[in-house]
View 1 (cartoon, rainbow, N blue to C red):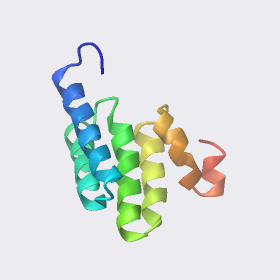
View 2 (cartoon, rainbow, N blue to C red):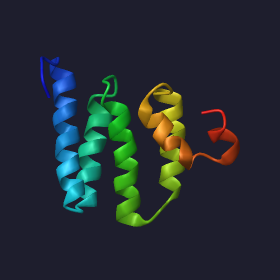
View 3 (cartoon, rainbow, N blue to C red):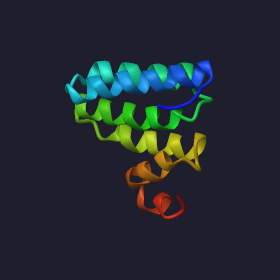
View 4 (tube, rainbow, N blue to C red):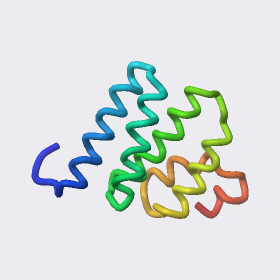
Length: 101
């Protein structure tokens, strides 16, 4: 990261980084916790959509429960419709919804 970030945006970026480290070490539960912290505490930041996406992926990797992916895609489409993360998650939406996303 270069340049100044407001405190909340910086905290969100740190949370994403910690989540990524845990994810790369296949510590799915810890990764999910880090991402959920970003979503919960920094929901109004640019990073929140990315955290929501990766939280769902972490949960899926931990449980093999694919239903979380569709729910995350719907939440991304509702809360962060113009984010790249909503577009990436749109593949998890039911066919009729993904055409409009």
